[in-house]
Length: 327
Ligand code: NAX
Image 1 (cartoon, rainbow, N blue to C red):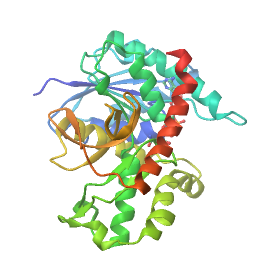
Image 2 (image 1 turned 90 degrees about the vertical axis):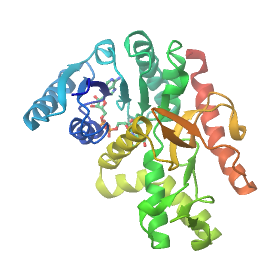
Image 3 (image 1 turned 45 degrees about the horizontal axis):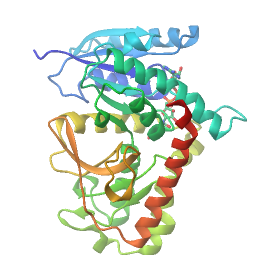
């Protein structure tokens, strides 16, 4: 039997947590031969801790053969102790009358504290995925608060946007999702993101040749992917949870086990490529192998794309400026 991998999950009693933990424990994220220890963090509130206890009881009741242990806590230093993977899902939601700036600052406090705790107690090669919004900036804050850990190990989730875009393209072109490769979602996990299928292929032929429709791209596809989260809330009365958990699993699975040459989108600290300033946590195309990602470089950027990539960058720069005094 392999040595168990320690997976920390914050916001474990929330909706995404509920859709995520059981799949991790069943081996869907790290493999059907990989035991896991779940280290779950929730707020130090009676209600949150009671709900977490209930989730842990249900995990117990599944008798997952791969679940080698569980920890439930309200202390980040306990949850992140020796963690190999950390899924930072819990975040402060926007309350009534709360301004975007306040939301940013409230979350900055959480991700500063959690970044420091990771820095102090997690595995020196912990792989961090931030799901809680604003995901890119929260990941940036955690990265800056953990100077002893490799900055490249801090990532933000754009995989849900990537998966949403894949499905919309498959529907439009009348092809199978599994046959599409080389899709990108540039930038911030927000409606400013830029889903870009200029390089996409379907069964190795150009997808752009199949969908040669600039009007559909600009006025249907891009806004639909960008506003999909809001459309789900309107339809379901609740925000995306199962699809978000699924995307988190895809992100971590591909990162650790490899994407087999397929392009996937990850929010990663920029190295200055594509005119995106160093360190900005931005959605880029990558391939993954052996627990490392490699950015796809030197793709040509046309005027239409440049404008959109700059717009989503401007939003990220604004968020970064809003928290700069805390870092
Ligand atoms: P819920 O409100 O259902 O759950 C969040 C849980 O986190 C709650 O149980 C809460 O008690 C806990 N929590 C809050 N602050 C915490 C802290 N400091 N430490 C530990 N636990 C904490 O939200 P849910 O629907 O699960 O969504 C979680 C986050 O994911 C939200 O920020 C949401 O905006 C974000 N999303 C991000 C997506 C992405 O693609 N990056 C898509 C889905 C989702 O909207």
